[in-house]
Image (tube, rainbow, N blue to C red; front, side):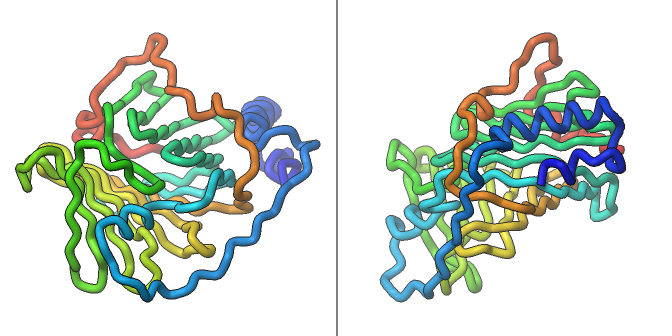
Length: 264
């Protein structure tokens, strides 16, 4: 697998080294035995649907790790503006990181999502956008001080999470589930009562989606497909460390939503 993606036809020598280094960091030693985990077939959910049932249906459920190669398309107001290859890593309960590469294997964007932090790094611009405590979860939610409510929305179940009693300004996140399997189809993050980021999941392999779409409220969308995915295998914990600030210009995520320029 790695040999195919590092073939001379795909990049120059420097690109091979950089891309190869990223793959080694994420996928681990190429000498390690590859563990293939077959995802169990889903069965329709037939029990009562409650807040607790939906909380335990969030995200990737029992999956401990996912690592995969990715292919991504970037759109601005529905028009394609760029395409990239990259690597994707997830570690339970709430850590996800994706790196995208441009010509010659250079990193053009990194996205880190944890329960404490959401970061988007654009190395070519030396800019790091971030949001503290986005509240995004890919596993069942802890109770904490957040208040949860559920309701039916068209052909989906919706789980709302609120800070405090204000049903508008206090809304921080909403999860949407299909009625048949209770698969978590969308995660919507709110800021000041307004939708800021939507993460959609599609083409499920058992409980795990192989296609994702991240939409920002400025008309920018990123569609990402997972390829050659491996489940419940080792990923170095350092891969999910906070993206270092160093000499980067640090801006709030809202600036990205307002000013994001198409990647070319």
